[in-house]
Amino acid sequence: MENCESFSERVKTHAIRLTESSPAAITGLYDLTAERLVRYATTITRHQDDAEDAVQTTLAKIAGQPILLQASKQPWAYLLRMVRNEALAILRRRRRWYFVQNLTDLITWRSTDRLEGEDRKEAVWQALQELPTLQSEVVVLKIWEEMTFQQISQVLEITPSTAASRYRYAIEKLGQKLRPFANEEVSHV
Image (tube, rainbow, N blue to C red; front, side, top):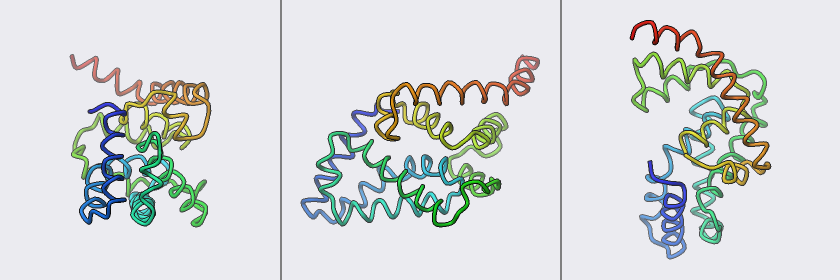
């Protein structure tokens, strides 16, 4: 996976194309970012449909005002923050923040990410979904997006130490939840 800075530069290039009224620019930005944005938004909303809505709303706002993204010093972090805000708005509107238990949408999303039939990855995703959203989103940004705690703090608008603390607690909880699976793996070696 490419580093966050080069990915951010690619995002900025698409934002510049948007301001120049290039018709293919929004498609290029979507192709570049959608999978990663939906993955991130799913950790917040816990439902793929809601995550996709958050991403579509964000990209529609960017298409209408591309200068917002182009002017950002860190366009990828800015885009992640926009998606996060949209995902949280969806949760507020639907009043599901505390009631989300069903992983059906996540399982459907995972299958498109080629994780079908992989018991270990399924166990990790289930354990991740059992974490509080504030912790699971830090794990996704740290591991899958390869962001530093400083970069995560900018996306989530928290301090780097808070990001690191949430990550540490999440990893501890994941370790406890996945310990039986790890023991099973060792016994088969």
